[in-house]
Length: 235
Ligand code: C5P
Image (cartoon, rainbow, N blue to C red):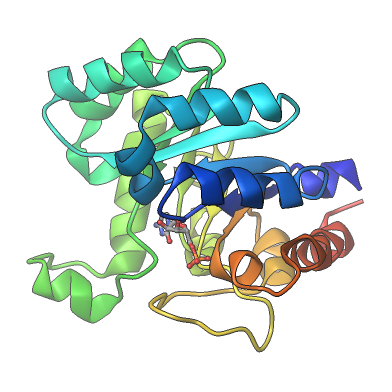
């Protein structure tokens, strides 16, 4: 079961440190990794990373900052973030190979750079509105290749693109948000998948926010998803 649990990343998308620590306390022992996103990091800064690591040394921390800037600035942010001992940090793959490489060079040995391919809230129409002539499927492939070339540890992509990525960068982690257990509210996500289908399609890690955070019993919701992952994992 610990193999299945280690694949589950919970998004601590809460406004303050107190709520984050309370949620982490309820989820410890039931999930593998805690994801700190922009909302919490902007409110609390690096102190919340240090405090979560102090209270829950068994849980990895994933800093989801989705950096997108000039290479020198991104590299500096990665240096600062990896000194906090986080397991993963995200950058936008659309920044380009030079940017991704600058980030990889500055990440410490125990911190992996994850390249966000296309946000799971973006569909064909959103890509067109952003000026792209290609849709999400093609963009994801191009950006996954760039991430592999730059030496990133993994990709963040929608479960729906996993199949088309089977031959692209096979050694990279595939971290998949937009996960919704059958019947769960989709919210603002567009390209969603169930936990079992995402694992069967090749996801190495699942990112789940609202289906766990908004549940009346978050630990029970997490355990339900871990059980689903365990059943879908190849033997
Ligand atoms: O609540 P929900 O399960 O939709 O949360 C998904 C989490 O994954 C959020 O923290 C969001 O920022 C993150 N994410 C995403 N799409 C990406 C990358 C990260 O939804 N492409």
